[in-house]
Image (cartoon, rainbow, N blue to C red; front, top):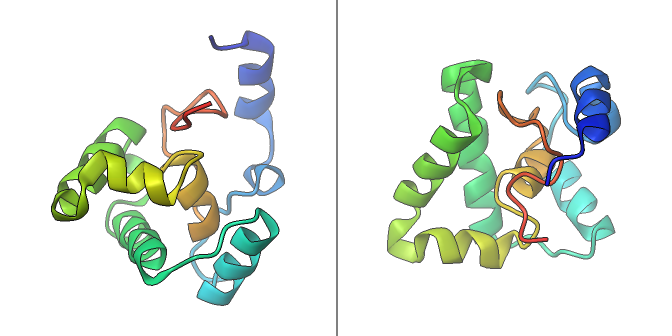
Length: 120
């Protein structure tokens, strides 16, 4: 259940403080690999493929694509590899919440709950 206090704090918090960036330029794959390593996750080529896909979506659409559309797009793009199950196998905390963080992207519009896209 959404805690309204957490929602208000997140809506007004600096995205960089939440681990999500506003711009694409300061990011590198080595930063993503290091951030994931600190979280106890070793990024593979599959992880990086999803991260690159998210960055491409953001470059194409900016902040206009919402979380639901992004999840659907990810599941469609990676359907041949297992879709939803594949995404959550790689990013157990959620393909949106965890992968956008490693991709250096802000959370998609409409994402109010910090746990959006997680299994916890």
